[in-house]
Image (tube, rainbow, N blue to C red; front, side, top):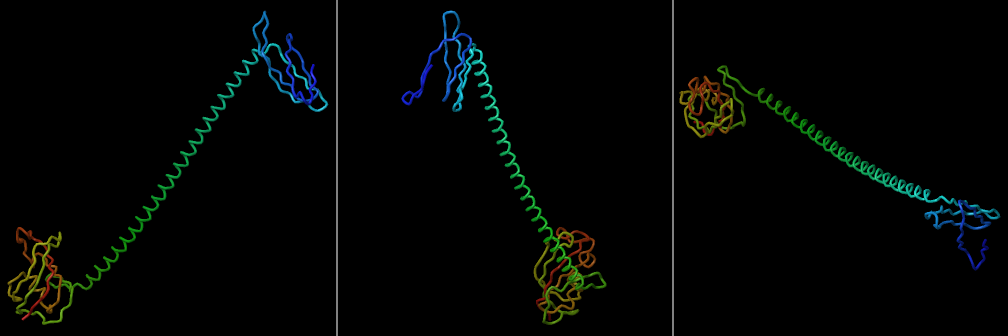
Length: 255
């Protein structure tokens, strides 16, 4: 039908056939396409094929005459393939979003776990510190209790600071600075300075007993039971009935 030359690298042919035909090419490629129409039938689209022939061998292309339905099928297949690709793309995007969300959740969980571990470590450290402080306090309290002196009357006292002056005895005229609190609640009820003579009943019995033996400059904590303080009647409104008292006293003068 046609021979290609160096100056004519391709050629176009318009052919008419019935139901089918065959084309062959000894070298090169054949592209078959087109629409044809006659007076008696509707136009039909032909198959389009590209065939590369091997050197020395003829390539044969068969073109079917009934191509309209095949073209519709190809279009439908293309639409289906496109929809499938779009679905796959959406699935891949959803999967990627899921992976990112999972990674974000994992990072958040790791961060929360690290924060929880930090809080647990801080709580443990604080607990150890508190236990150590409690142990030290118990040790100090035990030491104080070991050093605490008790009289047969029920009075107890701690020496908070030693003195170096004259020693208070029964009948001594003393000047004392004091501060009083309720033993049960620790509520402060009185403080000041007072001058009196020891052993004459000018003050509560707990003072007459607890200040004896103090030296000028000495400071003591007196734990006074109620019967050596204000007894069952108390001293309303500041001191309730039957209250045990704690006094911090310092001997300033002794004559």
